[in-house]
Every structure is written in structure tokens, then in C-alpha cells.
Image (cartoon, rainbow, N blue to C red; front, side):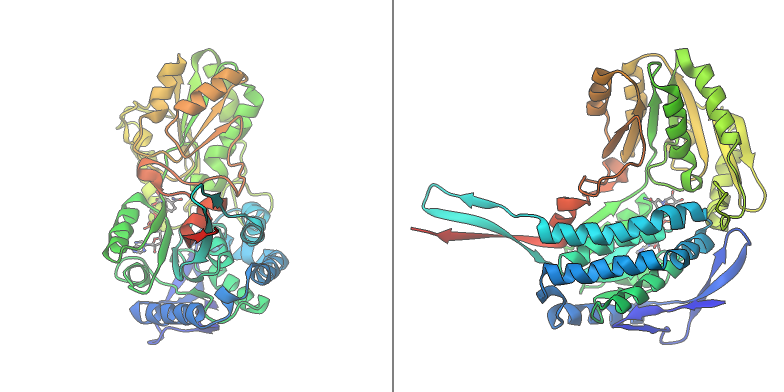
Amino acid sequence: MEFFGHVIDGAEVKSAGGETFTSVDPYTREPWAEVALGGPAEVERAVAAARRAFDEGPWPRMGRAERGRLLHRLADLIVANADRLGLADTRDMGKPISQSRGNDVPRAADNFRFFADHARLTTAETLPMDSGHHAYTRYDPVGVAAAIAPWNFPLMLETWKIAPALAWGNTVVLKPAEDTPASATILARLALEAGLPPGVLNVVHGYGPDSAGQALTEHPGIDRITFTGESTTGRVISAAAAAHLVPVSLELGGKGANAVFADADLDNAVNWSIRAIFTNAGQVCLAGSRLYVQRPVFEEFMARFTAAAEAMRLGDPKLDTTELGPLASETHYRKVRGYVETVSDEGGTVHSGGLGDGWFVRPTVITGMPATGRHQREEIFGPVVTVTPFDTEDEVVALMNDTRYGLNAMLFTENLSRAHRVSARLRAGTVWVNCFFIRDLRAPFGGVGDSGVGREGGTFSREFFTEPKAVVMQIT
Ligand code: TXE
């Protein structure tokens, strides 16, 4: 079995007491990697190393161009190691290799390139004042950032947090999800190879409660916490941060609504709606898990959508041809299975799909589910979609907004006015019109309600990972 250690102060290390845990490959359902299991002692060492690197090391002082050069070198190494990194995520959580190596790895490299360039090129405010003074803004690094990551896009989401924190001159302690530790250690090894000084990027493995995650979020030496994961966990982390008045950025769950109007380009709507719910086996906070279709095209859309869902290729996620892998872990499989098995109890019908072999759930389409049913309200986080007909624009806007989440929504229409009108009325952090998951890293990303607090991306990440300082000068 491969071994993945913590990376603390520039060295890959085991836990003080030699404790380990294993990562299970959800396709073979066998352990494939042994991982150092950290706790408060390892967190203490990592935070101390990050603090030293920030207070005494070259990183915050070397300037954005030089930091950017090193981050670009790290991006080059990520691309050069795409096979290893992609396979690590695929073995850890069952994501098809075409998505891990093909999408997540290039995006991880882009995260470093984008934030390195953004920090170097972005301007700050100068405010001429009538009083004979002027003010300007400095964006200074804050210190040590704690990043707690989930298992659904391991490398991609870790780098989405690490890249802006580092680009703005901070140091980082990352706690990867316990189901997906491997790519984080590989990334930290590559960071050292790229020339990042010791202590700038530290990785501590372990669980959440009563383990490395909790120790990190409760540590008084942390200056920022960025977290992606479950909404309940977000509340716990927010409370831990409040004890030290540490700002948090929380990207939490979702229950994405997707409306297909009768005037939509149906080919395009089917294509994106399939991707919206079945990419990464639906283990996506942005997943379009509530699909609403206007009644005149309901039958036709359903026929095409179901045919496309049934045509998806399930299998070994290590094969390039596989489109849908198993669910990420046994625990998670049991959770999703629980929803599939209770569809009729809640008043719905499994129109197509259902449980597969092992930890597979086939692309599952549910109809007739009442708006109050658990399947319409809770985040299933699997390849399971409810489809509901609607008649009017007002009705579908009300249905789409009838959720405690508010991460994103999609709508499909060829009517320009409707696209703008409905987008404005939706309670969501992102609205995609006639597409899904198209990202510009300058755009704000985050959610309302139970989907999170704060936004990341471009200047929004800068606001979070820096202390904006106003300098006011007398000029006359
Ligand atoms: O999430 P957790 P889990 C949703 C999805 C999924 C459910 C549970 O519905 O089924 O959450 O997944 C760390 N202090 N999402 O259990 O527990 C934990 O170790 C500090 C949505 O994996 O939130 C891991 O690194 N850290 C989501 C990370 O938090 C703690 C992505 C996420 O774990 C902690 C993933 C604590 N007290 C799951 N408790 C999205 N928004 O995309 C846990 N952790």
C-alpha cells in the first residue's frame, strides 16, 4: 500500500505516535493507501511552522511577482504530474479519471496561475479627498490560514482555497477530507519541489470531530478559516471560529434547482441537465437535483433525458470511457441508498435507475415527489434527480426558491427577457442560463442561506485572505 504522510515545515512526516488510517478505493472496496492520522499534536506543529514561515520566513516579504513565479512553477508541476494526481483522487473517491485527470487537475493548476496573476495585476483604490488629503488601500496578508476541505473535488477545492491564500502572502495549514487524503500530500510534495519555503504549505491528515479538523479550527494561532462541506459542520466550525473572532468563509451544501421552459433549446437543456446531476455521480454541491420542466415539453424532455441517463457508462473509474463511478465511500453510499429506497414512502416513483452493484447508484430519475418530500428538500449528494412539471414562470420561481439552500440555479429558455427576469428573482449565489458549471475565477462564488457565508473568487478571495488597510495622507 502507498503511504501518505503529513507535510509539516518542509518535510513529509508520520504522526508522533505512528497512528495511521487507511483510504478505501470505492470501486474495489479495498484499502489502497495508508495515511498518517494526525491530531492536536500534529496541528500544533503545523500551525507553529506556518506561523514561523509567516513571521520570519521570506514568503510574505518576497513580493507578488516572485511568489507568482513559484506558484506558476507549482502549476507546471501539477500539469506534469496529472496522471498521478488524477489517479489519487479517483482511487480515493471513485471519480471517473476523465473528470479527475481531465478536469480537476487542470483546474487545480489554473487556480494557482489565476490567483498568482490576480495578486500581481489587480489594482487597489486611491481616493482623492476634497480636504487636501488622499486615501489609498493596502491589501496586506493576514497570517496563517486554515483550510478544511471536502472529498468530492479534493484537489480542485483544496487549491481553490490554498492558491489565493498563498498568492496574497499568507501561509496555510490544510486538513484534507479523511476519505481523500492522497492528492493533498502529493500537492505538498510538489510545492516543496517548486521551491515554496518550508512551513508555507502544511498538510495535516485526520478526521473532523475530536481529531485534526477540530484541533485546527479551535487553534488560537489561526487567522482565517476557509471551509467547504456540510451545512451542520459549517455551523460547528463557525462557532469554533467565533471563540477567537476569526473570520470564516463557508461553502456549504446545495439543492440546485434547474428550470426548463417550453421555449428552451431542448437538445441543449437535456445535455446540460444530464451533466448538472450526474457529473461526479451527483456528489456536487452545485448539482441540479431538482429539475422543473414546463408542461408542454414535459413528456418530450423526459423521454430524451431518461434515454441519455440510461445510456451513461458505469464502471471502473480508472477507465477513460467510464462516465459514472461508485459513490465515494460506504457511509456515503448508505446515505444515498436510504433516499433511493424511500422514494415511494415519500409519495414519489422511481421512473428509471435505482441501486447498482457494490457502491454504485445508477442515474436515478424520480417523478411525482411532492415539494415537501425529503427528496426535494434535503441534499442527497448522489446521482438522483426529482423531476416536476410546472405551468407558469411565477410558479417555478416560487418552487425554485422554496429551499433552505441557495447555492445555485439553472434555467433554460431562448427568451432573453425571461432569462434576465427569472435570474434576478432567484435566491442563489450563481445562476447559470442555458449552461451549468461554467466558471470565471473572477466571479463571486458562494451561497445564501444554508449554502454558506461569504464569497470566494477574484477580489472576493482577496478581501477574505487580506487585511485591507486605509492609509490617509495629508498632501497640502
Ligand atoms: O462532510 P463534512 P461529510 C455534504 C453532502 C454529504 C455530507 C456529509 O451532503 O453527504 O455533506 O459529508 C471536516 N471540525 N457535503 O461528512 O463532515 C471533515 O474531516 C473541523 C457537501 O464528508 O462537512 C472534512 O475534511 N473539521 C459539500 C470536511 O470537514 C471538521 C462537500 C467535510 O466534512 C469537523 C462535502 C469539525 N467539527 C459534503 N467535522 C459541498 N459543499 O460541496 C468535519 N470536519
